Image 1: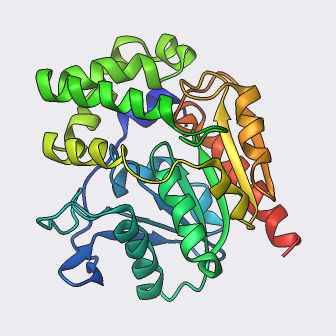
Image 2 (image 1 turned 45 degrees about the vertical axis):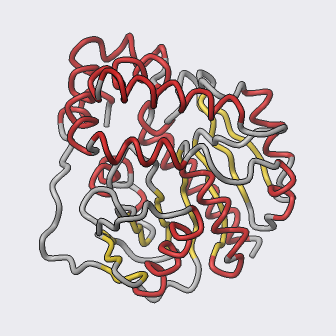
Image 3 (image 1 turned 135 degrees about the vertical axis):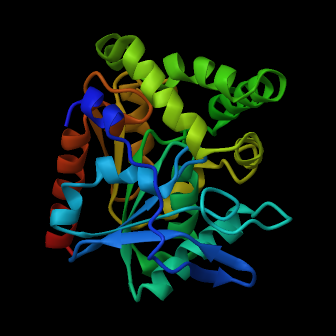
Length: 288
C-alpha cells in the first residue's frame, strides 16, 4: 500500500464488540488482537492510537498474533486522575499479556514508546522475546536531543494548539521523500488523523512524561533478548552511523536502515517495514 493509499484509508474507529482489559485497579484498556502464531505487541507513542496500526500490520497478522492497545489516559482506555508513570505503563503491558494468555511477545516500539519497550524488557525479561525499536529515542550518551525536541513541541502545543504542533512536527518527523511525494493532500490527510487521535490534554501529558525516566545508555547493555533498531536514513534524532552505534550497546542488537524514511519509518514503507519485522522474528525464533 502506498503512502497516499494509507492516508486515504485510515480507519480510526473503535470496535465496540471488544471487551476492555483490566490491568490495574481502576484501569481498563482498549485492546485489539488478531492473527495466530508468535505474538507481536505494538506499543503506541503518545500521538497514535490502537486503530492506527491496522494499516501497518495487515501483512503481519497473516503470520503472527498481533496485539495493539490504547495506553491508559489515551484513546479509548480509562482516564485516571494521576498521569501514569513509566512503571505503571510497563505494568499495563504485562496486564494485557496476562489477559490474553500470552506468555511472551515481541515488542514493537516507535519513537517515545521505544523507551517503554526498553523498560518492559528490563523489568519483565521473561515476558519479552525480542525488541524491534523503530525510530528509537535512545542514544549512546543519553536522550538530551529527544527531550529538547519534546520540550519545543510542548511549548508549541501550549501556546499555539494542536494544529500548530502538527505543522511543526510534520517536516521534522516525516521524511523529505514522503513530504515531496505526498504533497499537500498527504499533509492534510495525516493532519486530520493526528488531530482526531489525541486531545491537547493527552498530548501535554505524554510530552511531559517523556521528559522523565532514566536515560543511561548502560541500561541497554542489560537487555539480553534479540533487538533490532529500524532507522530511517532521514531520521531527525539518529544518523545511520549513530543508529549502528546504539545497536552495539545491546548484547544482541543490530540496526537496519530504511532508505528515504523518517523518524516513523513504517509510514514511509509499510510493506518494507513489515517484511523487516517478519525476517527479524524468523531469525530470532530459529536461534531460540
